[in-house]
Image (tube, rainbow, N blue to C red; front, side):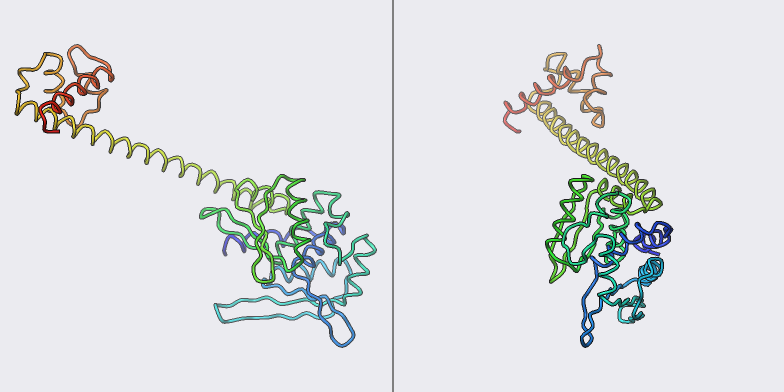
Length: 308
């Protein structure tokens, strides 16, 4: 089972005890995927879903709220592997009347007041939106959750602004053909959004994945830093050795002052040591900066001899 399927399984098994919470989740399904269709003179609200799990959830919610289901269709596609889904049809006037009794207009592009007034109800509304058209990427690969919304631009903007102002969650929006995709790409925003929807188990798994990725990132940065330093030290050491060999060939190490002669000999004999380690085996021991200054003098002398 994919990460996205596990999240849908968890959300679809949350209890349906609170009628107001059920109504908010139902409204999320309607706003995300609800489509108006005419059969003769009768208008129907049709909600097509690509997940059989989400379809069952919507069916259960409708039964819980006593909203008559006019028709249920199951769809099974075999083009890219087995894919099951379906759609539920409701008489539009019955849905509109049900929501109107709760002070909600299905035609309104703003977030309904009964949904706005309680974070639990708004979380249920988000859950409906997600179950109708959402997907999430395995956080071990990247942080990305998106919800496809077959609705108006005004509603999408209203949703984005409300979430930003009330929960400090940044929602990105992009239009694809005639639909909108609302998405989050931050690990913290993803955790907050999933918490609102009620995905506690998924939040726990996500938090663990975030910590693992953070550790891996820290280790990677450390290794890159050490590798860069090692490369830099290796290049410097090679230049030191080359300079000392030039001096030995053209001048002779024995003709150097004692402090330079000692560091030149130790550098040639201990090419793998860094500056600090070279300083520790000097007699008497000296600091890293003192070693660097003496090697710098040797480099300058080699340049004067004309071969660097």
